[in-house]
Image (cartoon, rainbow, N blue to C red; front, side, top):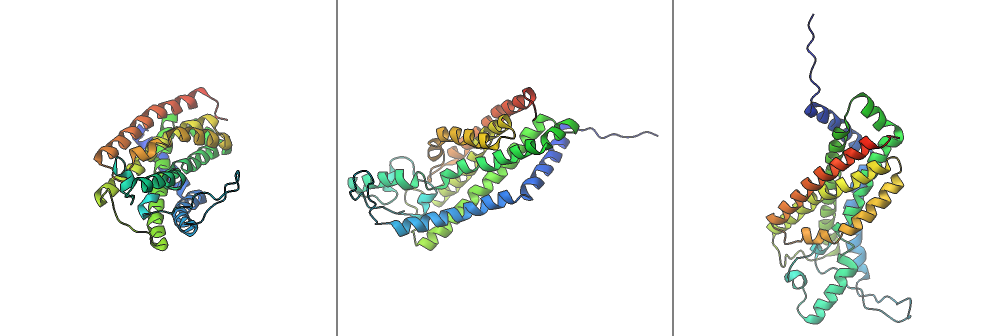
Length: 284
C-alpha cells in the first residue's frame, strides 16, 4: 500500500508555529493586562496632568518655588508633536515667550508622558514570552522534535509585533477617552485627519523595528528575563529620540514607508542574528 507523506515545507511549519504562538499569547493573562494598562494609562496621565496644572512645585535644592506646571494644550499632545517649524506654533504658542514655555513643557511632559514610552513597554511581552520558552523547556523540546530556529524567530517576530500593535492602538483609544474626560480640545493645528492616520500607521509599523531588537536580546539572555529586560530598556533608550522624528502628528506617506522599510530591514537583519545566536548557543 502506498502512503502519501505530506512535505513539511517552510510555509507549513511557519503556519503551525504561528498558530501555537498566537494561541499561547492570547490565552495568557499578560497580554490582556498590558493592553488594558495601555488603555488606562493615557486617561490617568491626562487627568493627573490637568489636575496639577497651575501648581507650583518647590525646588528641593533651593527651597524656592519653581515654574508652574503647565498641562496639555491639546488632546493630541499625548500622541505626539508636529514636526518642522509648526511644532511649537501648532500647539497654541503665539509668541517667543510662549514658545519657550512650550519647549520646556515638551521636555517635561509630552516628551515622556506620551505614546512613545510604549516602545519601552513592548519589551515586556517579548522578553517574558521568550524567557518562558527557555525556562519551561518548551524551546528545547520544540527545536528537537519539529520546528527550525528560523521558524521560531519569524513566528515570534510576527506574534510580538501583533501584541505591540494592539498596545499602541489601545493607547490611542485611551488618549481619545482621556481627552474627553479632561475636557481637552481636539483642534488639529498644524496637521489634518489624514496626517493623523498616517501618524498612527507609522507608530504601529515602528513596532516592527523594536521587536527584532528585543527578540535578539531575549534569545541571547534565554531564561534570564531580568537580563533581557535590562538590556532591552538600555538599547531602547538610544532609539527613543528617533520615535518623534519618524512618527510626527503631521506624518506623510513617506513616514509610513520609512517605518515599514525600517521594520523589514531590522526584522531581516536582526532576525538572522537571532537565528545565529540560537544555533551557536546552548538552549538551556
